Image (cartoon, rainbow, N blue to C red; front, side):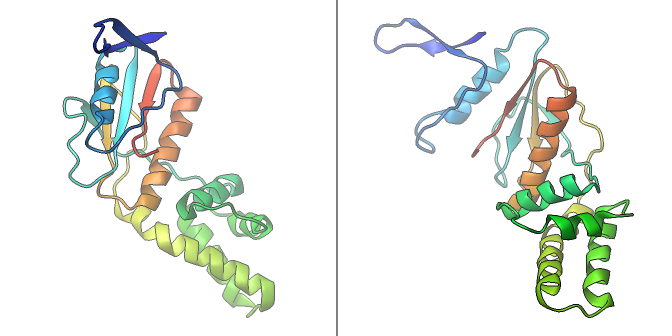
Length: 201
């Protein structure tokens, strides 16, 4: 599938680009990346929907799109918590998995996972590697948990036909990464005929 983008200069010939897995690059404020993305979103075939993210405070891009509330649903299985921490810290966790598994047992919220970490660290006054890992995990949670609890997130992702935009400019980069990850996972599992525009990828 291709999307009409514009006309070639100086020949005036029609320019179309593939819809799938398209990357738009260029110099900021000189190349028209956002203008091109907005054009693509408005030229999708009938039955398609699109979602773009605003990531900068006060950004006005995608002005004519339907506004969608930031979507985030927390899980407490260890695989999810591990990926959440990796997204928040923008680094791969190396050997902490067994400690994360223990911290997630019996938890029904991310707050409880954090409390399990604190309890395990302080309960037996552990030392050495155990203390170091639990202290690091606690620090990860202390960075993102207050923001996740402070902001009201939608627990359902409702996109209208046509263009949609999710404004994340008021969130930290770490929480933006978690929201975008949550949205992409939901669309991957449940969405059809949906185009996602990720600025500053």
